[in-house]
Amino acid sequence: MPSREQLAEHLDPAITALLTVECQQGVVGPDSALPELADEARGSGALRHVARLVAAAHEAGAQVLHAVAERRPDGRGANRNARLFRAAGRLPVQQHCGTTAVRIAAPIEVADEDIVVRRLHGLSPIAGTDVDALLRNLGCRTLVVAGVSANVAIPNAVFDAVNLGYTAVVPSDAIAGVPADYTPAMIRNTLALVATVTTTQDVLGCWQSPRRAGS
Image 1 (cartoon, one colour):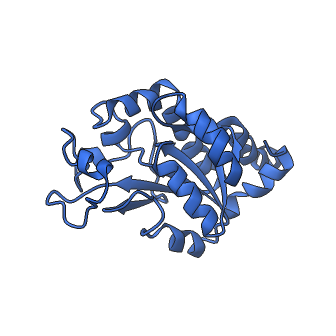
Image 2 (image 1 turned 180 degrees about the vertical axis):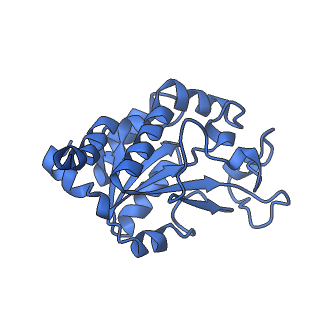
Image 3 (image 1 turned 90 degrees about the vertical axis):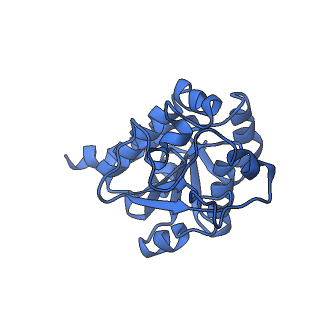
């Protein structure tokens, strides 16, 4: 874990963005296409922690981006080159553009200044999307990554962020995957090697401190 001073330096709201990953109703909501993942995201408290991070980012003035995975009803442009994509195409709940399934799930609140980045293909919330260009235009140097899943999209986002030169910060209690014991193993053996691993409470402490000092 970094020191409080090191973490606060990384998390300066002026240069930090929060990226929520696939926190959409069709993935983590009550009618999820992936009920085991949805149950883990909610039961572990990860989704609640994501909501707390989003609210704190709004208060601190850090930019929030929501990465949403969706597909056209006709499937045009969607990948078919991996087992995961083929299985997703057979699920009873589809992440179709414009449907309830691709809306950000409660209890996360989306503000007017938030940016929703939608992708029709691939595994990564960053590669092949507008996220990198948006972050650079916003002057961001640090990316806080939260959401699902620790199996695929979260490590993809962290690797891409690091490869693009950003400092990646992962609140370990604000991500979830299946089975439940896979997430801490992924954090310990992979994400901790390339990202700054911390907790939701520590991130909130850094973002709330400037306001307490100035109040």
